[in-house]
Structures are given as C-alpha cells and as structure tokens.
Image (cartoon, rainbow over all chains, first blue to last red):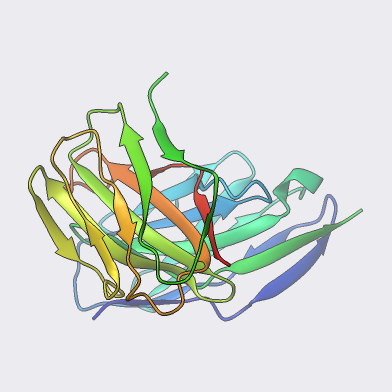
Length: 112
Length: 114
C-alpha cells in the first residue's frame, strides 16, 4: 500500500527566509501525482503545488517550488521569502487513481 | 461561484445519537470523498464515491455510513457505533477519479460529542 511520510511535525522559519519541508512516499507505481496542500488556521485546505511523476522538471508556483527525486521517492517543498501568511499546516499527498493519500502534516511557524 | 458547501460548521451530538453531515457541490465533479482529521493524524479517508449510487469504504469506515443518490450530494452519517466521533470532518470532490487533479475541499464540520 502507498504511504506518505512527513518526518517534521513542526518547523519554524524567520520571516523573509527560505524553508524546506520534507516528504517521502512509498509506491511501486511509475505513474502518479504528488501534491502539497496548505491548511491555515481557518482550516480551509488549499492546493499549493502539483507534480506529475512522469515529468522530470520540478514544479514551481511563485515562491513555492518542489524538489522531486523520483528514484529516492522524495518530494520536498521549498518556500522562499517566507511571509506571515505562510504559517499553516502543510500536507504532502500522493495520488495514483481514485483517491489521495495524505501525510500527517508539518506545522510551519513564521517568526517575525 | 462553484464550490463545495459543508454544513453545519459546528455540530454537537449526544452519545448514542446518529448525526448526518451535509456535503453539496456544484462543480459537476464525479468523485466525492469524506476525510476525518485528528491532531497529529493527518487526513484519513472514511468513504469515497466515484459515481452516483456507488461508494467504497476508505481506511476508517467503521461506524460511518454514506449515500450518493445525486451527483451533487454526498452526506455522511456518524452512527452511535463510532466510538470516538469527535473530530474535524472534511468533504472533497474531484473532477475525474482517473485523472491526476487534486481535490477541491469544503470548509469542514467540527463534530463534538457531549
């Protein structure tokens, strides 16, 4: 069965600095999709970034980028120029077909 | 605007009672999902449905039931058999279960057993 592991339950970063959140996953498939979701204090889940496994190029969305290492089954999220609004719970997620499997999340604190 | 509506936002239930959480979407999405969120546990899948009148159990289906009579609606009933129902419940939908798109989420329902 597929699993998603986020080894950092909590992290802190100084405002305007860069932070990287780690994620590893386990699958025997070669074609799948990976996501990072953000859950701010409002608890609304927001899609941050999406990566297609068959694409070698790392996805980027403004200040958010990923480091996708398919062989290592690693999918980290880098947040550049951290802002106070980035404070949230971040979930790494995997999708093959019919459902998404989520990691347990990393709580990110932004220090002013 | 298209989206997913969960209601109510907060729900209180007495022990031994069944309660139904509502989830409605106007996105014309085929698939719908229910997740439970507990502190430190991430999101765990309860039930999902890829088509009307069909649904599958997720990882923690015991004590829950669902129906999918309309494409737009996927209500979740928390029965008295669920031993620890206090949690945050999230409903989500997806345009096509066979594609690699992510979910659209509702804003959640916080259920508390009193």
